[in-house]
Amino acid sequence: MTILALTGGVGGAKLSLGLTHVLDPSEVIFVVNVGDDFEHFGLSISPDIDTLTYTLAGIVNESTGWGREDEAWDCLEELKRFEADTWFQLGDRDLALHLFRTGSIKRGRSLTEITEIICSRLGIKYRIVPVTDASLRTRVLTDQGSLAFQDYFVRLQCNPKVSKLEYHQRTPASLSPAIKTDQISGIVICPSNPFLSIDPILEVDEMRAILVEREFPVVAVSPIVGDRSIKGPTAKMMSELGMQVTCTGVARHYHEILDGYMIDNTDAHHTAEIEALGIRVRMAPSIMHTLDDKIQLASNCVDFLDELT
Ligand code: FO1
Image (cartoon, rainbow, N blue to C red; front, top):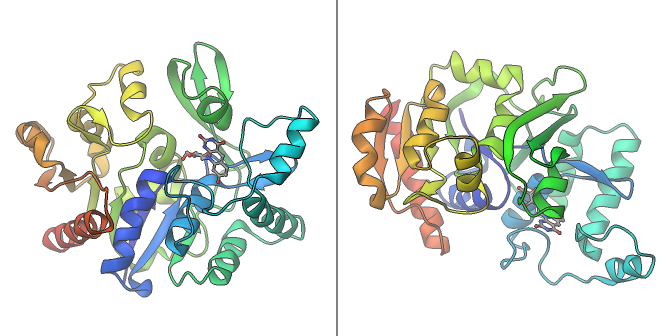
């Protein structure tokens, strides 16, 4: 039986790394958001998959949380000479991965297969799986119009005011064949951005159906601690969308699919209102600075799932 960990990029990768210290490779599948994926200079880029891959391979750039450590930037510097679009920073080593992925897609391999090959070449024993092999793209409706995800996130630095999120599918996206739905023993929703990272995963019909008809527990870790985002624009977006910017606001967003919710100790005063939604609450330190923090939180999630089973 397998736990699914639903995750986006930087924040989710921290808990995912912790999970690899408490679960064997056969016990967990990391199901990754693809709503951020896009084409740039003709290359197929899957930022959240790559962030998790580099993190689990131990080669992520620790200061940004994305991209590679020991990166070289010769290509980007040359591109600047041609006044090309250099707002999205692609390092030389990272480019090699994009060239491999793009070529493989052109030759007809699926994103699931390509991700498996990349993981194995980087020595990762864990399964990193895109939620779908189909095209699923997040669009952000803002006061500056409808924006492709990376335009909003990287080019415009999340500055536009968000009014709505849309998840565009060319054809109804089916779940990656690497996710065996009859073998799931529990789901952990990582402390990723609910709108940008987790909701696109839940847009895949089969994934939502698994969560609605489940016979196993689902636990989420709040991405909001003390009324602020642990990472990124979650709090800003919640406020722009008219939501209460607290861990309870996120619990309300997820309430149909949650059995358990991990909140930070500093948010203890929210327990009663979350439990009134029919969700069990467990408190633990949720800000992950060190590897030990990640392992401890991961271990708490797995214990919580056991308790709810
Ligand atoms: N994030 C940035 O803020 N600026 C960048 O230039 C940037 C480049 C980049 C290149 C490859 C990659 O895999 C990720 C990259 N990211 C960059 C991160 C990424 O776009 C976002 O963190 C995610 O899409 C949000 O989860």
